[in-house]
Image (cartoon, rainbow, N blue to C red; front, side):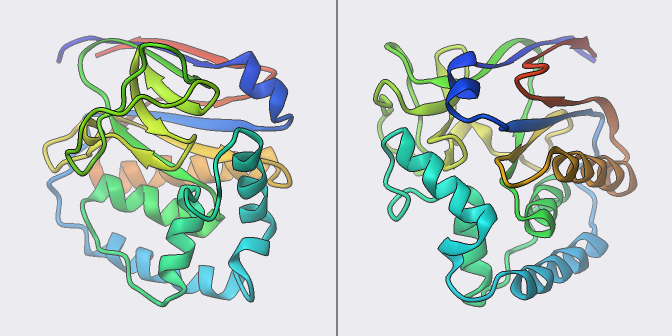
Length: 241
């Protein structure tokens, strides 16, 4: 297996602007994402039902969604136009719609997001060197949208998640790039799980535990690292494979 080197940072600028923010990172290799996992589809339905019980009334007023709307306003995004991933998913489930079962790794991210009402995303991780950062957009950044449209240049000041100058996710947790699809042949990934106050860090840690358990049970993958990044520990450096 080829070696992967990972340098992962939360920028001081983002942490200073959003006190109490934390991000759980779970790195996985050797996952069998071809597996037929009907048990995960069942867990997805259960998580949808759980969310419908947890979110009553105006979705935007739920504490775990309102905090993301306020964070978006603070860096200049309109939350009614560009919704954090957890708000977009919650609104879809409350229609009510059933989320499709896509593949085990993607399903695991969606299950955890719905169960804990937290943004949770999964990214493929290729061999080689990755310089990952949650930071403000800067000159030279480029984002390839998932619809195949022309490369976008995020405005400076927008919070993005990037690998070098390649933006993987715009507007913090809003939309992932075309290159970030987790496919059946994907076997090496990392999960991001985001927590803003009033979500306690213990809930993010619990969500990380669920990711690890589901990955092991349903994909046979190896958890290489599981780290909670925050102002107290804003960096993860890893070499594996």
